[in-house]
Length: 194
Ligand code: ITT
Image (cartoon, rainbow, N blue to C red; front, side, top):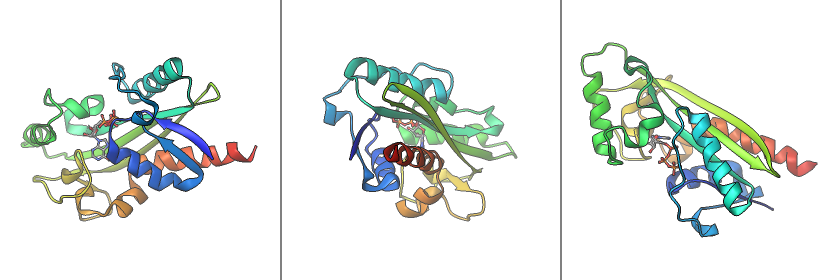
């Protein structure tokens, strides 16, 4: 079994990813390797931030690892909150972050948006990227209790409920992270065959 460290402090994301890749890989958390650092995330793109996370872990712990950066891009807000999704309102308080998106969209007709994920993988010192996105729209008020982040205000195209009204299983089939992680899993299975 291949051990891979996932450069995240978000337990929800770790669970989602483990569920998608199955049991061929053991995904270790930062806690598992004794990393309690605040890994820098100072890039202006998802790709830069994802790369920063894996570069940091590899240089400090010399481990095979992957890290993602994800977020919500709202067209009428010129792609915001984007790389600032986790702290859009200036804090990590998701109630405030969601309120700010809803407030800034209040008088806009175009409510199209997408979640995006970029994963950086560093395996045997080799760098790869995987990307996923899901298109949808932002609704007027929160709906649903599942998931995390902006899930209560995002309805993916082709659905009539938010990510927060879906079971984890349902979200994991279609989410931006699922698309990117599927690619990662396919790549890793190929590597295991070599
Ligand atoms: P790490 O950086 O420690 O991995 P994070 O919570 O900051 O955890 P990301 O950088 O990937 O995670 O995502 C930034 C924010 O984008 C996240 O805090 C959420 O607010 C939002 N986000 C990302 N994926 C999401 C999803 O599947 N559903 C809802 N919101 C999401």
